[in-house]
Length: 186
Image (cartoon, rainbow, N blue to C red; front, top):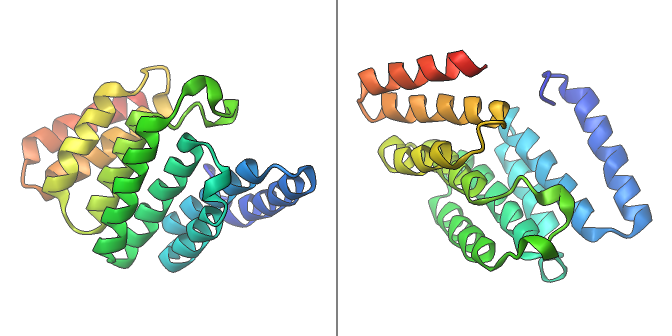
């Protein structure tokens, strides 16, 4: 997926989904559907992204708060790309609510990455998709401030999103400075 080999990534996702099903790990299966939703958002299939996130959320009661929160974040991202503001806002609110209840020690180890900065980044991306760069900027700014500097990929991508939000909000100089910072990382 990260190397833009979408067909290969999709085959890996399907294989992983089958393995999660065979192992009976619903949470892992839901997480795989979340990543498939993310892929769909970025390849221009936002309706598929929404359907994948909603499919994963069928098992919400059986999921830990952080896992369910990440799914609502993916739903918000897909809904934002379709222009569905109501679903986007509801999903973002639910994501925040669930993440606040998460206890790190009770979460699967593979969801380590879905912390407050990831949720903030998702909110910013969703608001950008709705054409609200000024609303997205504070979320993305907080996400960048919170991300562990060793997560260079995440930090660089969030900086690019922040630069885009700043440009959309009319802050050209701040957008250029943010993009320059991102270029130093990526």
